[in-house]
Amino acid sequence: MRELTEKELYLALSHAKSLDEQAGRTILEQFQTEKPALAQTIFGVFSSVIVEQDQSMAHLFMDLCFDIICVFQHAFGNLPNQQTMGFGWLKKSAALMDTELQAMMSGNLMDSKFRNKLQDRFTDRLINSNVQTGLVKFLHDSISEYATDNPVKPEALQMTQTMVFVAVQLFGNMYDHVEQANRN
Image 1 (cartoon, rainbow, N blue to C red):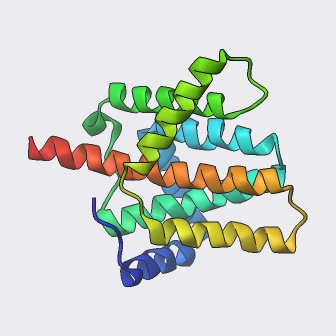
Image 2 (cartoon, helix red, strand yellow; image 1 turned 180 degrees about the vertical axis):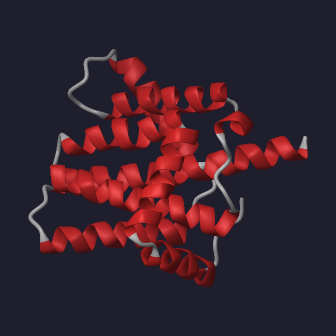
């Protein structure tokens, strides 16, 4: 997957911001219906990790995830459906991400060697993946701007930025997976 140009990103974000409430609701319902494993990971697991730190940041995270969905759809076409992706791939990706995220949370009891291995694998996968840096920067700036205007714990700010980065990665991986499958 290629990185979006500034113009492409601007157009996609403008499109996301121009949608009315009904169109937005339709996009979210379709996403949850067609990709329940991914939707549960993003809106369930990820947001619950953030809500432990700050509920308002969890709400912001979900709003930004809507922008992510819209940007990817606008720039790269409709999101691959679960049948195209294969439920096994989505389930495996979501379970792997959930396990790695559990290792990132300090309150979870876990063998330290196993925790370190999961954290290292998570970091390696993120470093070696395709990143939409312009989109991530825009989303991180939005989070920082929100934190400037609202009292937010530094941990909540960092966790929200991390989860946004991971969500962008998941979408990129999803499109990459379909692209690779179509080449084979």
